[in-house]
Image 1 (tube, one colour):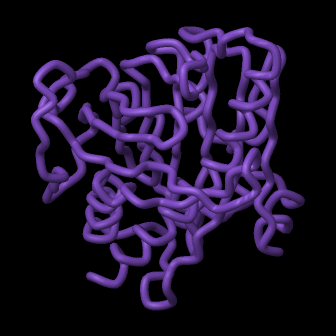
Image 2 (cartoon, rainbow, N blue to C red):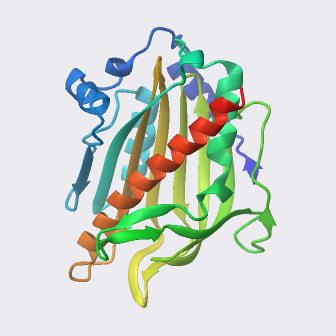
Length: 268
């Protein structure tokens, strides 16, 4: 685990988000139609398997900058996006999250061990299936010594942690997680440091996956944007298989976030 020392990035991030987030609502980030869809309980999912471009990306300069940089770096051949809203408990419904709420939420998202046992719907099998059998923070990708989930008294601007996660579909793998925090937003980005295989079939090469979860404070709600982008192996049907898997897994991660947010707010 290491605190990232990115003074130029931090300065730029601070400039982008210097304005107060008080008074923000869902429609500051998404269209009125999208807001109505989310408030009706629907979860939009967009899967693109050729020349993907963001379709559900919230209007947020800092988040767009991250997504643009990842797309340029990876040149993905597949992208899955989804949106979700989390209604804050009545006692904390404010125009912006407080320092204690932000810290509790940040630490809950950092708790990667809680991903162990997470269930998702397997489209290929037609049943619920375990996502990660095991999940733990490790000291580094070489030694792989398990560490407790990190806890902070205040969220750092940038943080990198490594995790070992055994996925019942793609095997036992090492990931890098980069966390970013600024007023009104948290972003974490997962990158695979080992190749993902489905049985003996290669699916996604080393460093060819980026999964992003962004949490935006929207007054009474938290708006959650999740996206996975990858350069997949070009075997017949593999891109479709990976795309369907990532779409279902994104929904599982959103349910995990809801549980983590519930825990965070209940401790305040």
